[in-house]
Length: 122
Image 1 (cartoon, rainbow, N blue to C red):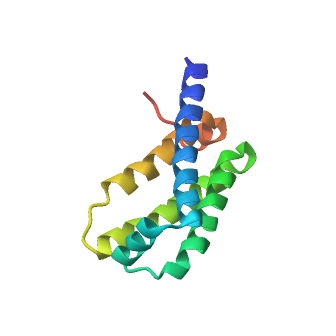
Image 2 (cartoon, rainbow, N blue to C red):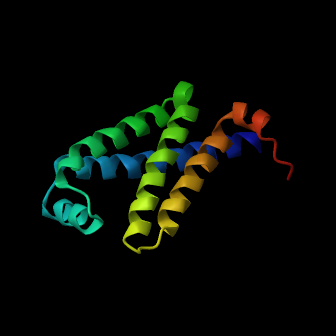
């Protein structure tokens, strides 16, 4: 059972890493849709590259097992910024909150050190 949970956590974390990597790549590559999206959010287009690099860095740190906890903390902060940005323009934030919860669920299932810090009794 424990092995299935560990692999489930790896699968969740891997899918999230792919999602965040695609998002970072889109920011780094740019394009008219990205420029329109940044304008819609009220962000200057000059933040596109720094945000893409930041997002990609957070994902790499999250994907490496030795630094995964720090990566989860950084991704949570990154998503917090996304939540505030969406709230500021009156858009829903369910997707961003769900991503944040999945970041921690994936890590919790694959990282035994977290289970000793946060024991859940099921």
